[in-house]
Image 1 (tube, helix red, strand yellow):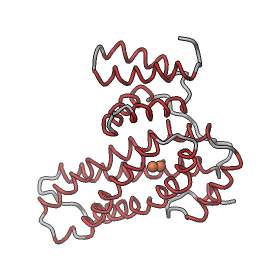
Image 2: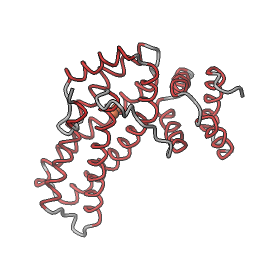
Image 3: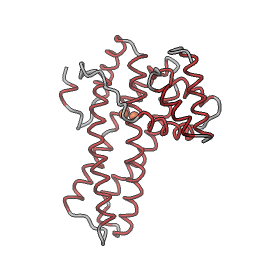
Amino acid sequence: MQAHDPTLEKNELKQILRDLKSQSDVETVRIRAEKLLKTVDPKVLSLAEQELLKEGFSQDELRSLCDIHLQLLSGKIQEGPASDLSHPVAILQEEHKVIQTYLAKLEEIAQKVKMSKNSTLSQDDVAELRNVSQMLVEAESHHKREEDALFPRLEQQGITGPPSIMRLEHDELRKRKKALKELTETAGKLNQADFTKQLTELESFIVPTLRSHIFKEDNILYPTALQAISENEWSTIKREFDEIGYCPFTPQHVTAR
Ligand SMILES: [Fe+2]
Ligand SMILES: [Fe+2]
């Protein structure tokens, strides 16, 4: 394969994704994928994924392919535009770091409930769980900034696949985060077994889904956006971010002008 020919790279990627789906000789396919993904341009990757959507792959299939892709990508975390911390992508990435700490807490508390004999939580854990579920709901402005200011710029350039998958995941997460908040508010009225069951169900969806969502944005969507969007447009996006507003946990040093 000729190096860095976008059309060839795109076709090779599409073939790899199809082969991964058919599960034929996964090891060989992985080696091919690793080789290509080391150098591939994120925009080419996004276009290939979106053409597969058009070819009839369902979003769910593509999402499972995305997960295989993420395993291949792990260890290859890309740095954001670190020199300018008020850049919209830097703000989103800083928020991701905080959101991940809430996910770790949620995971830890759910683990404690499962391990404890009578499924009870200490007052401190209940308070912590309430705070975490509140903050996950407050992360809504992060998703709104992505949906209203960032994704439309990618969509205008024909990059529609990754934003549509991210929107779908926001919707699925929104429902569960709301349910988690309601559960923590009514915790005292439920019997312990019901509370544990519901908490476990919600946690086991929210934690892995939001973690993988963040990973995809940090490693695929944001790098694609950094390549596709011009400097001027980023200033407009930053203004729109300011208008939409930030989360209570957005680090202040990134939003200060
Ligand atoms: Fe998102
Ligand atoms: Fe995000």
